[in-house]
Each structure stands twice: as C-alpha cells, then as structure tokens.
Image (tube, rainbow, N blue to C red; front, top):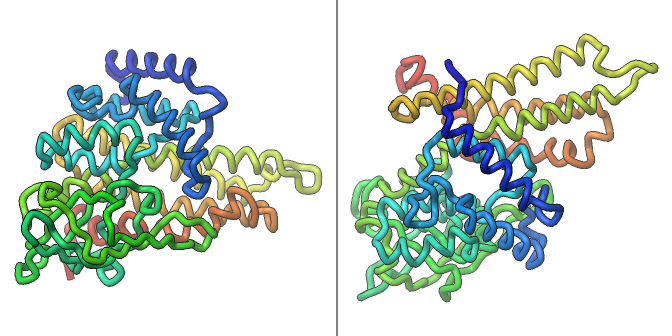
Length: 385
C-alpha cells in the first residue's frame, strides 16, 4: 500500500495547518463536547463553528454551493488528522454535518437544502437522529413510532431512545412508520422535525459515568408539516441507509483518538517508578503496552485499507466492521491496562471514566455480535446459520 499523499492533499494540509495556527487560540484549544456545560459552552462552540464555516472548513465534503469545498476522501482524512493534531474542537454538529446532511443533499427538496443546511453548517441549529426505539434494539426495521397523515401534516406518536444531542437539538431526522400494513422495511418514512414543536418531551438518560449523553424522546400528537418529509413517503428505509452509510464511514478516523490515548498511557508508565526503576522496565508491562501499540497501528492500517479501496472505486466493504470491532475492544483493553498499572489511581480522571464508559463501546454503533456476523459472512464466507 502506498501511503504517499498527492500534491493537492499536501497543499491542503499546509493550508489548514497555517489557518489553525492563526485562529486556534486558548479560547478554543482542547474544547470538547460538554453537553451539560450550558449556554457558555454552546456560545463558545458556536463561535468556533462560525470561524470554521466562514473559512470553508466546517463541512469540506459538502458541495461548494452549500458552503463546502467539494473535497475528496483524502482531503477529509487530512482535515481529521490536522484538527486532531492541533487539539481543535470538533464542529458543533457532528451528527448533522457528517450523517444527516448527506441524506438531505441526496433526498431533500431544494427548499429543504437552502433552508436547513446553512444553519446546520454554522452551528445555529443542532441536529439529532431519532432512529433507535426501546423495543427495537439493533433491529431498526421493527420501529413502531407512527406518523398518520392528516391533511397537510403528519401526526406523530411514539418514542425514541439513545438520542445523542437530543436535549440540545433544534432539529431531528426522525424515522416513522407511515404504512403499518407494509412489510417491515417498507412503510417507513423520514421526517425532518423541529424540536420546538408542541408534544415533544425530551428526557435525559444518566449513564454509569454520571453524564447525560443520551436522551429518550416521547412524541405525543406532534404535528409535522408534510413539506418536512425527506424523500418519498414510505421510502424512509432508503433515506436511513444513506444516513447510516455515512455514520459508519466515520470509523476510518477511529485510530486517531485511540493511538493518542495509547501514547499517553505509555508515557504514564514511563514516569511511574517501582523500586526505583521505571515501570516500563518490567517485561510483562512492556508486552502489554507493546500489544496495545501494535493494535493501534493495526487499526490505522485498517483505516488505510478502507480509504484506499474507496479511492480505487471499491464499494464500502467489511473493513468498517473489523475496525469497529478492533477499536471497541482495544479501548476496553486500554482501560484494563491502566487499572493494572495505576492501581487505585485508575479510578479517577480520564482512566476512571474510561473504565466504566468503554463497556458501552462494544454495544454502541453496532454491537460486537453484529460486527462478527458481518465479518463471518462477508469475509470468511460462512453461512448465516
């Protein structure tokens, strides 16, 4: 595999790095997601998001006419690498820009594009996805939230769960069942819902870390204009697959955060002393850390293979399932290594949070069992049963 970047990507890297050196000051550096920080955090993130948008860096993959750069895959990889290297905050609309906007661009009306995308781009509106339901699990096709046509509106009733950003979102990409008599994958429609509409109740869910990252949302006789239908009625499954395809494409960047975390863990181990000697002189510790380091590099290689395949016209393959599996299990392994090295000190700070938080990573974004089935069937050629 040739990892040499084309000249255009190198030029874009220099351009973005220079821009970040100029505009990324102490007000923004290291500012991450803190959904309980309130209006001050939102204002700071919106300020940063506006800087990115004005410079054309908020959504580089979008078409130029909607505020993007029409950037290719290599430029998107460069963008992620340079933002991570500089410690720059993410955009305020990670779900909207990366997942929902591609569906609006492909399926939306011109009015929907012109009205919704500019506000999403600048962070004026925050978006969430209303997909998962309490009784549906990983089987999205079994959703039961209904939308009944009543003149020029749909009347929505039902419940969604695990909705990230739901308590701060202005808009929601909502999957509903519009034809209860159709087969499971049919009769589903996609609505773009203003979250200030009467009848919407958002209930934050407190996780084991004490954070309110997710939400459940209850819809009671919520009236959504028919003009907010995204794509054809009863073709919402196809719209959802567009959204999920872009969501899963994000695994190509998973290695950035985890490899940085491995580096921090190795640095911590070097600083620790046992009987006057660095902890990293212990052969067992060195083996554990070396294994984690190699797994991080393997994850980077998987990302490179996925990117290479896309650049050469290969349809998205099972690399995303392998990468998700390796990443989630590696994150859990790192928290266990930290516990073994740091002892009681691993119960606080970054590692203390990780030790409980990473339990969810083999469930969220596609469970380990689902990903293993994909790998077994599509790579190993094993039968479904």
